[in-house]
Image 1 (cartoon, rainbow, N blue to C red):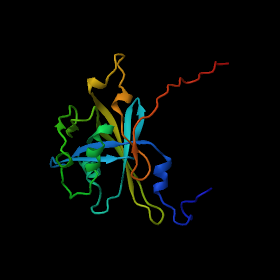
Image 2: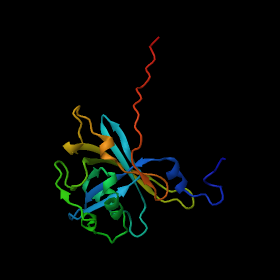
Image 3: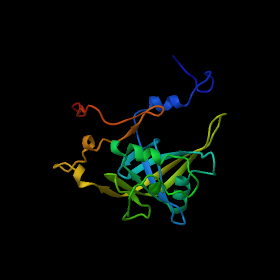
Image 4: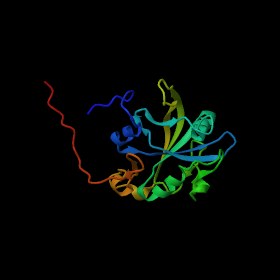
Length: 208
């Protein structure tokens, strides 16, 4: 089967989300220029590199305002925090995805405790076992070119601080992913977490 996204009858763009899966969820906390907290999940999220430490998340155009509050806040302040979403936090995360009026504090909406950050102003999710404080590097705008497309804004952030719950650290100093059970996004409304784990060492062939 071959599908051309431009010509296939009834092509659904949600197909991409089912193929590129699982995807980590960026639970992004930010502050408006006037100090109102915002918290929202983004499944178009990932790590770009570790040296320099850079991550990205992507916002599609909002339907009811010029742009989503998270994006507007990051533009205004140049700061945000990526909070790790665990399996146990799935319902709270889902609450923060509600379409609510501009200026709503999703921390309060979902009953989540705020923790102060160290190097940036946006608060952290107290129940999350890991947080990445970030400063804005750049925003890349992807403009629509074909019918049905919307503008996407890809936010690049440099990680300037890391918070870890020591309860999830191993004796060897590793972050225990199996115990953390990070929540991941699949297709449609499906979510999952880690299943069977296997370690594969990279095969390094001898140099000639």
